[in-house]
Image (cartoon, rainbow, N blue to C red):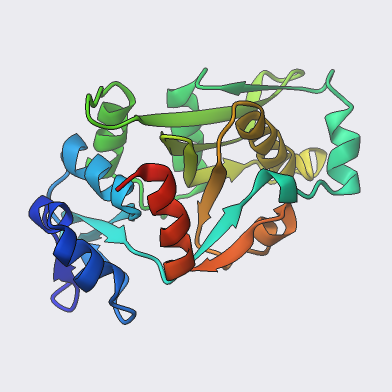
Length: 236
């Protein structure tokens, strides 16, 4: 942890530090903090950080990351595979919803990701953010659920957040059973269609290193190109 710089809300509020020290530093992506307040988390998110957490010696830290690259989906670029197109037509098998079962999605993420970074203080913070109203920012924690109608079980889902007209993914899951092959891709496709229909500008999928994001149609943007796009939408 000593090799990662500590970050404060004053650093984010100081536009000189934010633009000329943090954004412009191409050698550093992770920072850390022990501030798990809703206000600070939203402030970081608005600045373009995606925050996870890390535990060392039973102490949990917030790890805001200013990524070197981002996977970003413009909805005009959405690619739907033939297998997912087939599933989309089988509406008798599934239902898709937004913000219907926040606790259920969180529990599934915890169950299917035993080493998940959403732990203790971070989970507490996410639950607080779900009900937190910020008068200064158009911020909202969101979840989506893909439910098997036969079992009434959440088969795939994710947690993320809305800021202005953007959506950013945090963590998700899908059940690894043969009967649910491609349901994770189905969930992402349905979410993309929902975001498009509701006039979101783009979907920030975070790290670009997972092939499924590229398969979905996401483009890899450098930090600089991402920030140009992000700042325009967020009005930093």
